[in-house]
View 1 (tube, rainbow, N blue to C red):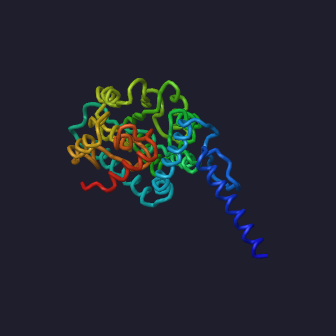
View 2 (view 1 turned 90 degrees about the horizontal axis):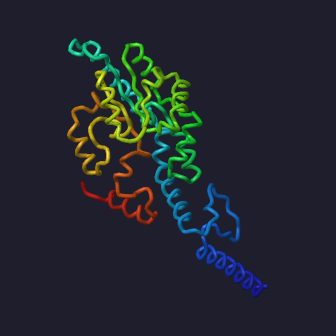
Length: 299
């Protein structure tokens, strides 16, 4: 009987080791000895490029999970949204009572995504499915679904600004030729005021919003700029390095909370690509190395 148990143990060991060897030698699409349910499997492909893409998507999804959990569940996130709209409203009221601002009509300028529209359900679904690499085709599909929600406090804030007589400009880097109609319909469905071609300024040729800002300020006195990205503000961070972006923000420190209102977005934005060149397309090992360097850096 003991000999039989030894043979069985040996057989099981050989089977498991053989299965492990097969997985290690093959691609992630290789079939293991026993099936284990997973959320997402690797692409059925022998191409190195496809496997590296899959590994990158999985790693980015893992990195984004805590950030998305915070945005989707934390009371503190909601508080910061309310705080941003409250601060902006104080600037609006101040401008309305300022006799020196009786020239051009008053306006506010704001980004859409993660500034007044909430895309975290779609972002979180993708991350939960193992894909944290939000590419343009994926984003176009999300926009065309027209299911972006309103951030906490956004509807009340925008409707109050509208009632006070200010112009509202939605300056977003959604790509106009394919996303304008879906964007307008979504904003109207959320009961956002002034959602029309005059006030929705999407990206045409350049992601640098300064040209669109200049068009607005030619005719309007802008009270406040609002966004989740430094590029949503007219301070010149477009295309700048991480160090330069920080220096520019430091130079404008007196304007934050008044002229410039920033909403928290730890999931995506220019800050990610500023960490390192090609950060989003690095191998997971390269990205881990960069992450460790920044996490342990003495500032």
